[in-house]
Every structure is written in structure tokens, then in C-alpha cells.
Image (cartoon, rainbow, N blue to C red; front, side, top):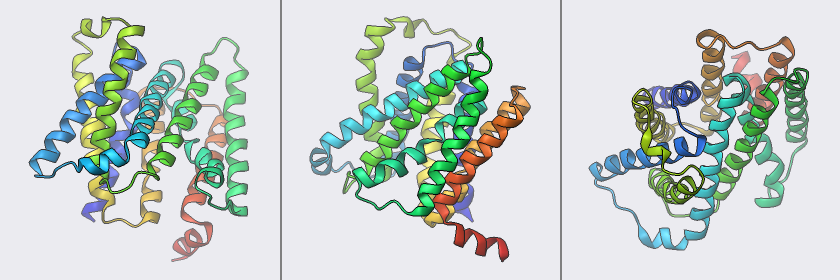
Amino acid sequence: MKSKIQFILSMIIFGTIGLVVRYIDLSASERALLSSFLGCLFLLLIFILMKKKIVWTAVKSNALFLIFSSIALGGNWIFLYQSYDHTTLANATLGYYFAPVFVMILSPLVLREPLSMKKIVCILVAIIGMVLIVGEGLSAPDSEDLLGLSFGLIAAAFYAALLLLNKFIKEIGKLELTIIQLGTTSLLLLPYVLLTEGFGIFALSSSSIPFIFLLGIVNTGIGFLLFFSGMENLKGQSIAMLSYVDPFVAIMISALILQEQMTIVQIFGGVLLLGSTFISEIGFSRFSKQVIK
């Protein structure tokens, strides 16, 4: 039960990221830099307090994949934060949750995993769901929904790349891996931010400071800590099911707190998208047995 509570709390924390980001008066790349840097520092402190050590031989042997996965992590955050700036929190979340579909499509090529008929059907249903969501954005020419959804899909592609690259990283613990990736992402984003945004990051408004620390320490640091602590004693099927607390929280925040509207067509598209990825991850036959019980 403790593991489930920890994992659910991590999903709730991740689900509030879009709300926190709205109150930070910085560009997407600046937010990504600060969240990865503060998250890395927090997790590194926890790592030291746990008296653990980084195995540098393993880091060296996985160096190339660590660099590419850190680039994917940075790109994921930049485009996700941009998505929050241009569309509703619900739309951004739904676009981002297309990542499992990208993973399913690429797995046969990258991981040499066969694509079952069930997964093919789930991919097609998810694509139909996304077309319905995007189609509504196209119906309003003055709206930025389409741009925001596009950024969400790009973020999903980067996240899918991160998941696939992590499959090739061996002999490094999950917490240790996250610290290294967050630290590397910070180092990679620093010159990019300074070259593109200049030194505006140091002129942060006082109203944004609490939310920066909230994003870096709570949403990133504590969120990942609870995530890894919770998943240690959970089965894969439980993790897949509980992961949908994240989009549920984000969509509820969008509707109830931010008062953002979704059309019936978009809601139906979201149900198709999330439902298809849910079934593809836990297995329809097992899910049916659970419902019967």
C-alpha cells in the first residue's frame, strides 16, 4: 500500500506541472534549465544522504546513450512547456500522452520487438483520437491550439526517444540515472539558453521565484523520488494503470481550476487516445478479468 501511495502522489505531482509552469515568467528553455538544475541538486542531496555512490565505470560505458537521452529529456521539457503556453492544459497533456504510441511504432525498429495485432489496433485508435483533437484546433483559425498541440506531440516524440534510449543503458540505478540525466541536461541547456535568451534568466520576477522552486524541487525532485520509491515494489501492470492518474489530474485542473473548455469531439478523442494506450499497456484480457472480479 505504501508503494501505491508513493506512486500515486508522484503522478499527482506530475499532473500539476502545467499549472505551476503557467506562473513562471520565463521562456520554455529557461524553465527547463532551472527545473533540471534544481531537481538534480535535490536528488543528489538525497542520494548522498542515502550514502550511495555513482558507479563511474558504468557511467563511462554508457556515456553516449546518457548524452543522447539527456538531449531527449531537455527537448521533451522545452516543447512540453511551450505546449502549455499555447493551448489548454488538457490539450497539451493529451498531445504529450501520444508518447506511448510513438514507442509502440518505433519498438519493432529500435528494440526488435514484434508489433502484435492488438497494438496495431491501439495505434490506429490513438491516431483517430488525436485527429479528432487536432481537427477541433483547425476549426478555429485564430486559436493557438494547433500550435500548442504540435509542441505537445514533439515533446511526446522526445519523451519516446528518452524511453527507448534508456532501454540501452545498463548497470545504472534509476535514481542514479535520473541525477546524471538531469545534471547533463542542465549542462547542455546552459549554453543554449545563454545564446538564445541571453541573461534574462537572471532577471527573474519575484512572483516567479516560488514557482521555480516548486517546479524544480517538488515537481521534479520530489516527484521523481516518490516515483522511483513507489515503483520498486509495484508490478508493471499496476504501474501502467496508476500512470493514468497524471493525465486525469492535469485534465481536472484544466477544467475545474483554469476553467478551460473542451469540445465534445475533443473529449471523445481524448478518451480514444488514453483508452487505447491504457489497453495496450495492461492487456485487454487481463483487464477484463480484473473488471469481472
